[in-house]
Amino acid sequence: MSSTTEGARATHATLTIPGSNKTAELPLLNGTLGPQVADIRKLQAQTGIFTFDPGYGETASCESKITYIDGDEGVLLYRGYPIDQLAEKSTFLEVAHLLLYGELPTAAEFESFNRGVTMHTMLHEQVRRFFDGFRRDAHPMAVLCGVVGALSAFYPESVNVNDAREREISAFRLIAKIPTITAWAHKYSTGQPFMYPRNDLSYAENFLYMINAVPPEPYRKNPILERAMDRILILHADHEQNASTSTVRLAGSTGANPFACIAAGIAALWGPAHGGANEAVLKMLGEIGHKDNIPAFIAEVKDKNSHTKLMGFGHRVYKNFDPRAKIMQQTCHEVLGELGIKHEPLLELAMELEKIALDDDYFVSRKLYPNVDFYSGIILKAMGFPTTMFTPLFALARTTGWISQWMEMIADPSQRIGRPRQLYTGAPRRDYVSIDQRG
Ligand code: CMC
Image (tube, rainbow, N blue to C red; front, side, top):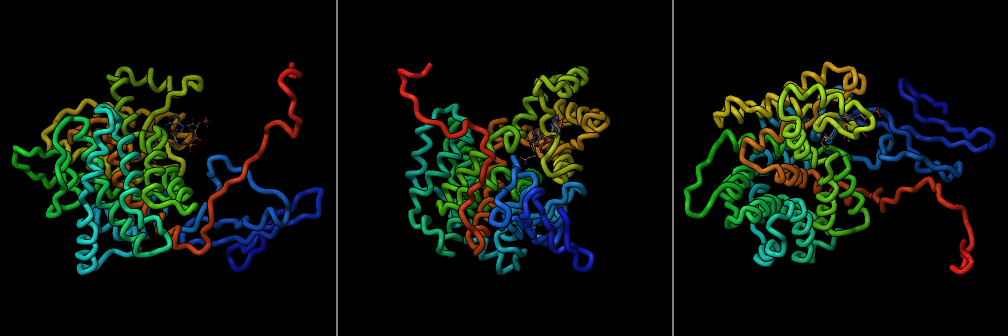
């Protein structure tokens, strides 16, 4: 493969297939940030071949203006703003506006956006009855998948994905209703009454209220925990073309309605390699149990035959500290301090594990660092969430990112149905043999 340059950057790469006279001119595309991208859209037409990239690690599946990650430097930007600045200075709904529309809102824009979203926090009473169909011990991710998908039956107008205003209302509905659905999934498992949303509270506080309040007791706000929850939501709001976001885009590329697409994203998030990792981290820490057991655990992780992973470590894109993990660690200390927890064995175990892993050549050589999930479970546990609620909380936050990505995709004129190809390694063509002649 050779390239043509113009100024400092190459403009085209040329791919020649040896032994044939076929050549492809691949334009090199420039983003605002990040490496150049070879445009292979005409590769098959020009050469008859296509590319093989299981896991899509080398493939840009779309053009996007929403989130940028520099995995080597440990940088995460939402619409250009560094995640640490947003986590420190912004609020979740402000970030939601940023992700959806591309800009931080003015005061007037924020007031209108806040009103537009919060007026949709209630669920239809028929949706409330859906919960009764689940077993009390159902995993809340199963409830989320089912109830979010079912919303499409309540808003038939959302099927018209070509109407920009309908799309916006669907986005508002999803962002507003997902805290209610998530909190009710929790209440259902505990047997406590569902608490209806309160629009006088902030997004994060309303969620904590629906989770923690009970009708006979006055509800006491806690600004530190509200802030911590808001920050957790900001940190999880979007993360470029990860597995669940790509699932939302792939489902959306068929023209499916937004509620169905977000339900597909929730399903993809559930796995332990993705959003299920926060739950898996606590399970792992519980199984390790004591600092003395760390060396044996690390040895097991390094043993290729064990299939044991150090959960909360490693990332497809970050080959450095996940910037979200640093903020999570700091938030973890703040929350434990506020709750008066001076000694949290799981946190001490996690910090010791991190120290040992960051010093071990296995992890260093593979550039495996703590990711966002390494500390989030400890915070959520301290805030009183059961482990099964960790991934639903991730889904709650990510709904805003998913719907922003879905909106961007639908409005993109180059968008077409997602349809990857394959390298077929099955049987070549053969003829049917009747059952009495098979041996
Ligand atoms: N523990 C031990 N070894 C690991 C780990 C880990 N957590 N992660 C990667 N490796 C090894 C892997 O075995 C491979 O080794 P080798 O080169 O000897 O075969 C090497 O590191 C490269 O890993 P990979 O599997 O090619 O990396 P990937 O990009 O396919 O996987 C990952 C990324 C996140 C799925 C993986 O690192 C992992 O399973 N981590 C644990 C689960 C986790 O914490 N997930 C949350 C990710 S952040 C939140 C989110 O985005 O959902």
